[in-house]
Amino acid sequence: MSIKEQIMASLKHEIRNLTLKPGTILSETVLSERFQLSRTPLRDVLKQLALESYIDVYPKKGNLVSFIDLESVEQIIYLRSVLEKEIIKSLAGKLALKGTLELKEILEKQQNAIGREDALEHFLTWDDAFHQTIFKLAGREFLWNLIQQSNVHYERYRRLHMLKQEKLEEIVQEHRYILDYLLNQESGRIEELIHHHLREDINSLYLQENFAEYIKS
Amino acid sequence: MSIKEQIMASLKHEIRNLTLKPGTILSETVLSERFQLSRTPLRDVLKQLALESYIDVYPKKGNLVSFIDLESVEQIIYLRSVLEKEIIKSLAGKLALKGTLELKEILEKQQNAIGREDALEHFLTWDDAFHQTIFKLAGREFLWNLIQQSNVHYERYRRLHMLKQEKLEEIVQEHRYILDYLLNQESGRIEELIHHHLREDINSLYLQENFAEYIKS
DNA sequence: CTCAATAATCTTGTATACAAGATTTCCTTG
DNA sequence: CAAGGAAATCTTGTATACAAGATTATTGAG
Image 1 (cartoon, chains in turn red, green, blue, brown):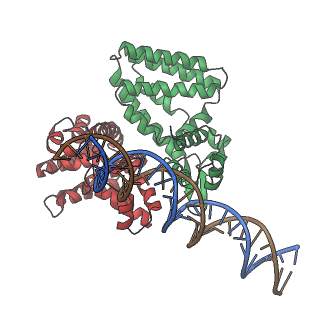
Image 2 (cartoon, helix red, strand yellow):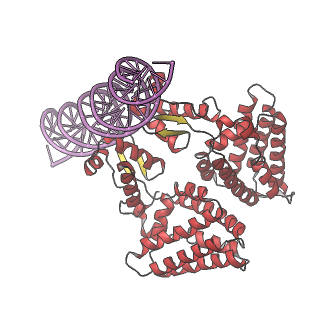
Image 3 (spheres, chains in turn yellow, red, brown, green):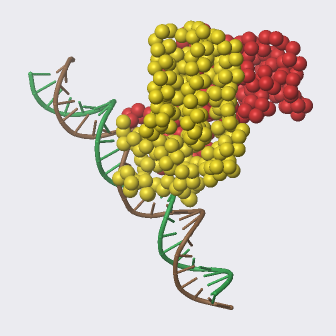
């Protein structure tokens, strides 16, 4: 992994987990001093961050960590909702043993993450792993990766919404239902389940009321 | 529109319509002479082209116009197929007069493009306009734009497949069926229609046999 | 002539000086 | 003191010299 890729991964991580708050200035000169690298390669990094909406570039003024765009969040959730309904239905009853074990193991690790040190961080990692694995098992990892390139806003929205532990328990439970459906096709209500799992709270005012300073107006 | 944006639009256009063939070398120095601009801003352009898969960058070696990646084509077609089925169903019977007129006008212009000078170029423009308008009317233009950022491979695939005039007539006819469904919800077979409209020929060997030199192996 | 080693010449990657616009500071003027 | 304007100082944008790797050409040995 090149030094540029390390810096990019580091900045992306800090923006996604809100260590770098929306509105924070990312000056090329400050970054070049912090990472002991000239401006040119850092500009490459910032260019990519801009293309993936991590930052907004104001020419001759500066680069700001982007504010959370709720419109983008809603659109990405809709996209995932539609896609995952289709993918899960196509996969139902056709899961190989290997895939089943993989998903069960992820579920267990996600359950264990609750309540532990640094819970949210680990929980979200396993949450992504669960959905990514379903995409992978359906031969659609390409689309998972495509969505990941446009999910900064959703990623940060999700963190702010998952601060409560009872929500985490609910999410794991819904994952169990999804796995049950994949194995037995029992539930006739898979569409509503996916819809609820991904879209719940999207219209609530929780974020606007509690994190207004992070939200794009 | 800045000079950099003009250059980027120009290169994108030439790559999409295969004027710049897959494998063509895009050297920074050659481009800087062609456009009378230093390497630095051109590198910005090339960086973005690389992120959107227009070119492949081989460090210290050169930049090549990317070969058509059929895997990407299939995934994008699947994505559009799933999304548009859902969008069209949600829009059926709810089309306002303005939207209806918009789609009818596009259909007419697309029909008129057939057989004229520079037919394919105009035809494809109106083909995109039809689908984009449907996304827009459903409040999903965001997702249309998202897909456009990843569609170089699909775009070139499509051009090579649409070289025959009878295929163009068939496409317009399918658009008429889609519009009929949006207005009357008559056809019970909208899902198969969308599937056929977007996915036909994806598994044929036409490209591999006739344009092997453009295809990523 | 053949082949290998070496040198020249490509390529992109990086550092840096300077340009140009935006902002802030500070000083002058009323 | 207040307000306006100029200058200093920020910011990113551009041009260019140089670095370093990859390729190609050349040259010399056998």
